[in-house]
Image (tube, rainbow, N blue to C red; front, side):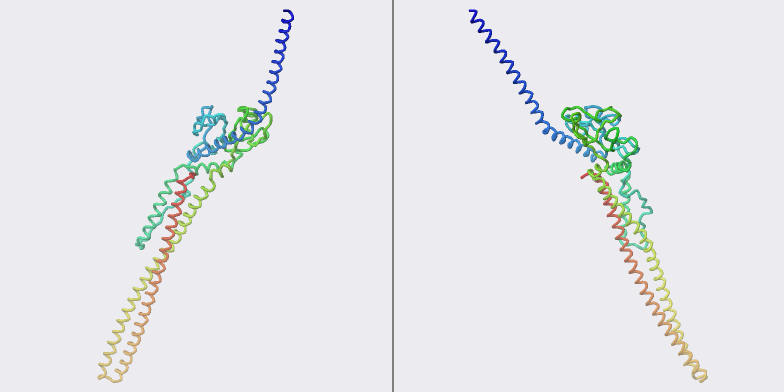
Length: 406
């Protein structure tokens, strides 16, 4: 019995040792497995983080197209933007219509600098008529009675009225003007920067993911040393820093949004309209001279017609005088011959005067027709300028109405 009991106790003790060895082996295998899983998950998580940041960036840029400004940061993870909190750093996922998984991101937007607040609705500073005073408008000369001129002038008036009404309308182009001012003053006091105590760069907005460890590190720690909240977006990964950030400078954001192309297109159309208007105003002066020239030519024709009539009267008088001279030939032969010769000379002179008056009338009539032709050509060119002005200004209005929309 003693031998059997001893054997039983030895067998129980051996089983505990074996169990301990097995547990140790399982623990080692578990640690190795955990490290292997962690090492294989990291490259899988980084593309997911980058994709999430890209989606957040697209949402922020889309907000500009819809609301004509950048969104403000949220004060907490509820995702509602809070434009009254200057220290807010949370991503406004709810305002942007995204899921709550974006609540782990931090977000910063430039709110500093006088007139450089990118999260505030911009002033209406961009207008299709370039804020130009087009008065006194396009006057139509009293002589221009054809429908073509009147229709073209009416189109000019309507285009000016429509463009002027756009001066108070705010859209993305006005925000682009604010962004351009920010790009021109990147070192203005209070602008948003990403970096550290020794170096920084101005940014329009920045997005930060805390990385795989879900802990913000480096300068991304809110209220950290020096008040920095956002680190360089390209800071290398290290054992003590695995945050991933995306930042947009004013020039890069302007290019992505399409500010330069949209502003340039509208400014070009507005400038073309102004050029056509300026040319029309100059040509109108020439047009008025052409109209005056016609009036002068008409006066010349009237004078030439009067000259022909007077010459004809003189001709009749000369012929009558010659007839009287012939009739009185029986009275005094010598004197009568002289009178007849003088009367004949008067008839010849009167005939020459009639011819010259007729030639003057023809010249005056030709000059009048030439003036009429020149005035018609100038009037057609004025109509062309009116229509060019109208098309250009209406094109600028359409671009202003479109704003930054695709």
